[in-house]
Length: 150
Image 1 (tube, one colour):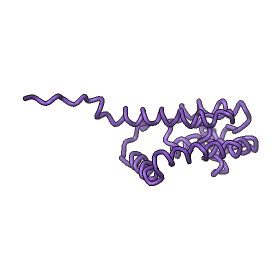
Image 2 (image 1 turned 180 degrees about the vertical axis):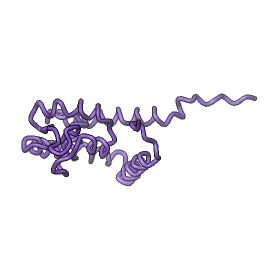
Image 3 (image 1 turned 90 degrees about the vertical axis):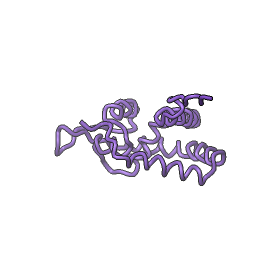
Image 4 (image 1 turned 45 degrees about the vertical axis):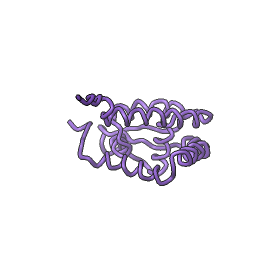
């Protein structure tokens, strides 16, 4: 008797991760919608709130996003006056991103929505499992893969 061959798609780590990311991302996007922010934008503003000024390259590394995608995500935030993006005074090739007061205000206004969806997820998934999930996902970043390396 032959055993059925496992479908490679079922074993695809990338597909499993992306499915979960789309599912969870849509949940966070919906929760944050009243603030006019998407989950990615909220995450960028939140990360910027912990930095005085930061280069696009450094911010991209911190949130594991390629510079081009980050620059695209920063454009609407800059148009709305939530961030500024300016040339570095010490290196004209670098761009410095700064959270504006309006950006900080919007991020703080979004925090209760984020906290609600975060709590709902952890209640459903389990706090311990959520903590292990975050740790496992951080572990993915420590694998040594360098997707944006030249």
